[in-house]
Amino acid sequence: MPTNRRIVVTGVRTMEMREEQTPTPAPGEVRARSTYVGVCGSDTHAFHGRHPFIPIPYLPGHEATGVVEELGAGVTSVAVGDRIVVEPTLPCWNCKPCRTGSENLCENLQFFGCGYPSGGMADQFVVRADRLHVVPDDISDLGAALIEPLSTPVHAGRITGPLQGRAVAVLGAGTIGLLMLAVARWSGAAKVVVTDPLPGKREKALKLGADAVVDATAPDVAAQVRAALGESADVVFDCVAVRSTTLAAIDMALKGGTVAIVGVPSADFELPISIMQDQQIRVQGCATYVSQDFATAIEMIRTGAVRAEDFITAQFPLEEAEQAFDASTSGAHIKVLIHP
Image (tube, rainbow, N blue to C red; front, top):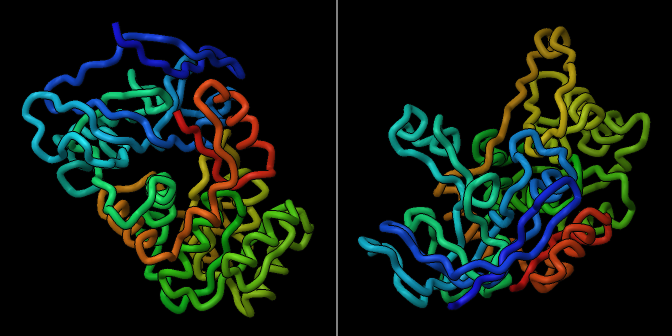
């Protein structure tokens, strides 16, 4: 009987590779052979027991790309042999957010690879066909692996934009922060300043187009960012979302600016509501993406605005998934991929 290897996070900082029967797609689903699966900050937070919405045990792998191998009954939107990237949100399509184009906020949302009974960190996986995007021929498999993570900053930039001509700060130069920098540049921001505690990450941000970088641990980080921008920030993208970064973001956005929470907080914390009211600061939550954000991400990769060689710094086989998770949190890499 054909077997399928799958990674399962069984406890805090504990995972194992299991062998199971090769999955069969139900009506409306496809079975895909996994090509590349990204290790996301959400994965590592959940692995360390710090993600607020992913319970353990879980089957990881929402940043999934692959090749369609089998169609379930009724599937006509993709064909066997198509290269695909998964849009891992699984909306119900019936609730108010779904009916109004905000399916990422579905009242009955399930999430492939995040607490769902299937994930892409396996040799093969099954997923709903309506959550697939066919990868254009002029995007490589490595480029395709960046479509899903890029869609998150695309969404954040779209709902807080337009960014054309705006002063922008990006807090955190990890994968999402550096992709956020690319989105700000793509969107025509007048000036972009990036903060990070690690010198290597700050240097990478400069290479990828930041106008200036600031040490995130500096006691006057907000003042330094405002000085580098030459004015207050119109939009601050907090791609870390811990107390220190969000408070600094509010200082950078004085007065009348927007703080976009792009990173996933591991815990709640208090905000200075009196200052936010008096200085008319908007705090905008940014939750994943919708299909139009995937379309923009695909276009950015096709045109070279985001290049795989600038972001993908390590690859691991499936049997070394735990090493891949460790590498992702080491600070030495940008995007780590698992290649089953």
